[in-house]
Length: 289
Image 1 (tube, rainbow, N blue to C red):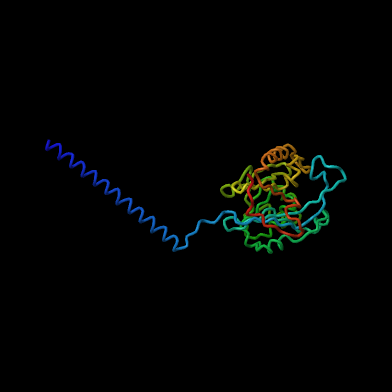
Image 2 (image 1 turned 180 degrees about the vertical axis):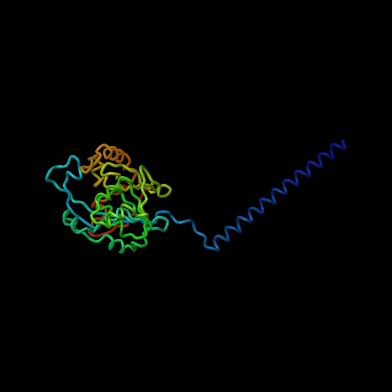
C-alpha cells in the first residue's frame, strides 16, 4: 500500500506540473498578443490597400453610327447615338489605361465625331501618359489602338491576332513600326492573367483577336466592342460589325445570363458618361446580388 500511495503522489505531482506549465505558456502567449496589438496601434499599422482603388470612364467623343453596324437586325438608313469612351483604373497604386482612343483628324471627320483630346481628359483626373504603367487594348481598330504610342513607358497588352490587325491598319510609318517591333508589347492567344482575378480573354467576334476584360472580385466586365450598347446583351441583339458572328453570339448569350450579377461597361454607351466631353468615377460601385 505504501508503494501504491507513493506512485499516486508522484503521478499527481507530475500532472500538477504539466498544468502549471500549460498555464505559464498560455499567459506568455496572451502577454505577447497584447504587446503586439499595442505596438500595431502605436505604429499606426493599417490594413493593406484595396487592389482596385479608382475606375474612371472618360468620354472624348459623340457621333451617330449606322444601326446596322451596332445591331445585326438593324434597319437600313437608321442611326443610333454613340459615345467614344476610354477607361482608366488604378490598380495597386499603378495607372492602367484601357483602349486609349485616337486623334487622327481624317478619321474624326469621316465618322463625324465631336471630339476632345483623350489625353487632355486623362490629365484632368491626374493621369499623365508617362505615369501610366500598362495599356490594355481590346482590339486593333483605330479608336482603341490609335494612341498607344503616346504612353512612353507603359507595357501594352493585346491579343496576338489583334496586334496583327493593328499593324495592318496602321496609318503612319511610326504606327507600323511600333506594332511590328516595340519591345513593350506583350501578346497572348486565349487568355492573359494581369493579376489575381484580373484578366483579358479572347472572344474574336467583333474583330480579329477582339478581347474582353474581367475584374472578378469587383464583378466588372469591359466588353470592348463585342457589345456597343446594353441592348446587345439584353435582347440579345447581336453585333452588326463582326468578323465571326458565331463567336459574338456565344459571348452575348453568355453575357445576357451573367449581366444581372455584373457591372457591364462598353466603349460606346452614352449613358455611362452623359456629357461630352466628360468623365465619371465609377468605383467604388454598388455590387449586384
